[in-house]
Length: 277
Ligand SMILES: *[C@@H]1O[C@H](CO)[C@@H](O)[C@H](O)[C@H]1NC(C)=O
Ligand SMILES: *[C@@H]1O[C@H](CO)[C@@H](O)[C@H](O)[C@H]1NC(C)=O
Ligand SMILES: *[C@@H]1O[C@H](CO)[C@@H](O)[C@H](O)[C@H]1NC(C)=O
Ligand SMILES: *[C@@H]1O[C@H](CO)[C@@H](O)[C@H](O)[C@H]1NC(C)=O
Ligand SMILES: *[C@@H]1O[C@H](CO)[C@@H](O)[C@H](O)[C@H]1NC(C)=O
Ligand SMILES: *[C@@H]1O[C@H](CO)[C@@H](O)[C@H](O)[C@H]1NC(C)=O
Image 1 (cartoon, rainbow, N blue to C red):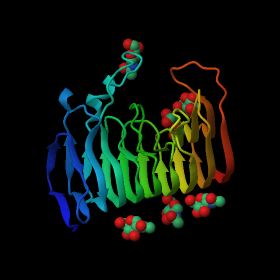
Image 2: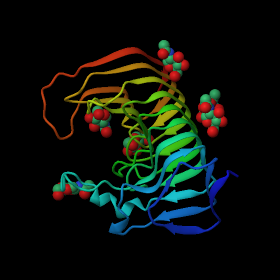
Image 3: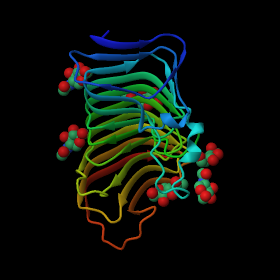
């Protein structure tokens, strides 16, 4: 047990939005033995359900599950009806967290992303299970941004959007033995939308299977786009079943804006090896 900890014992508990903010002395353990369920009322529609910030040595585990009760909120996620609609809660949001581990946790039916990881350094995520219907909006499994030294291992993702998406500033990401499907694949997205966007480099995606995904490995670049370097990416031993596009590089990603600005993007050192359909 860490020096600080929250242990949620066996049982199914309703949990309203909660934020844990460090820094703390010593490690922090968050253990779910059975299940937590999110609230569904409007007052609970913040940008997070469970948030951790500024924590070193966070350990999340316990074998239990997080149920985001997404079906209550997915109809509100409609930008064509309301372009200013509020962001829906991410089930677990981790910002400025270092030297941590997430393992043996299930996340189902998040209202928005299941996990959003920002400005993280050195984390291992293993034996997690993500599940949401294949038509649920924006239910990315794990979204990473501005994060370094991340390992995602031995995990299962079935969801409505990207299984794993890696945004600007992602570096040294290792993904091994991951199943994705249904879902939109393992993506690098969406790059170049802001002047502040940092380069993306050092990905190894190995020994993964993608089943029934529309796009398996996708790289999305906004138009208009600021200059950015994307380098040293390896996708190796990828098994594909019922996948429409094994590799999709979209340099015109622009769902709502119209622009004729040229994309300035530099690609270097890519390898796509041993794709097996
Ligand atoms: C979003 O809103 C538009 C316009 O009102 C509607 O046509 C569409 O069916 C809605 N989509 C969803 C997923 O509810
Ligand atoms: C990464 O985090 C783990 C878990 O806290 C720790 O054991 C390991 O020493 C860290 N690695 C580095 C390079 O700091
Ligand atoms: C590769 O994936 C297979 C099938 O999921 C798994 O059994 C095996 O342990 C993985 N190998 C490594 C080195 O992770
Ligand atoms: C490419 O990325 C891998 C994995 O992160 C790293 O070990 C390697 O040093 C990188 N190579 C270069 C030339 O940067
Ligand atoms: C292929 O994937 C599509 C999209 O997820 C799905 O609707 C379809 O049932 C799958 N077909 C087979 C043969 O698995
Ligand atoms: C595949 O990716 C491309 C580029 O982002 C996108 O236009 C397309 O809609 C995706 N396919 C599906 C079925 O989601």
